[in-house]
Picture 1: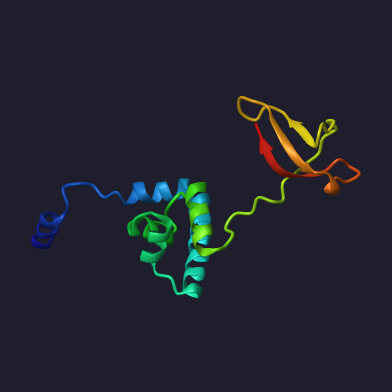
Picture 2 (picture 1 turned 180 degrees about the horizontal axis):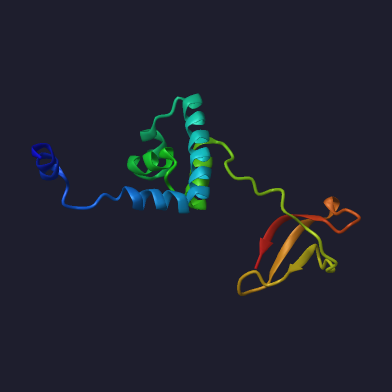
Length: 144
C-alpha cells in the first residue's frame, strides 16, 4: 500500500484536460487538417527562400508567437492572415479565380445583377469573351 499512497500524494489536485483537448480536436478536425496543410506549404516556401519565423513575423506585422501558432497548424487562419502570408512569401494559398455561375439574367452595361448575398444587391463585372453558349461567365469583380 505504500506505493499507492506515494502515487496518490503525487497526483494533481486538478483533473486532466486531456479528454477535453481530444474532443476539441475531433470537433475541429476538418479545419485543423487544412491548417496543417497550409502550415506545411508555408514552411516549404520559407525554407526555399531562407526565411526565418522571426522574419516572416516582421514582414507580416505580427508577433513571432503568432507565426509559431500558424506553423504548428493549430490556428484557424483568417483571410487577412492568409493574404499577408501570400504577399510576404509571394505564393498563392487560396485560389478564387475559378468562380462561375449559370444564369439567364440580362447583362446591362457589362454588369450582371446577383441576388442579395447579404443586405444589398451586388453587380458582378463579367468577362464577356469567356461567356459560353450555356450562359457560364467568369466573375471579374463584385461591386455594391
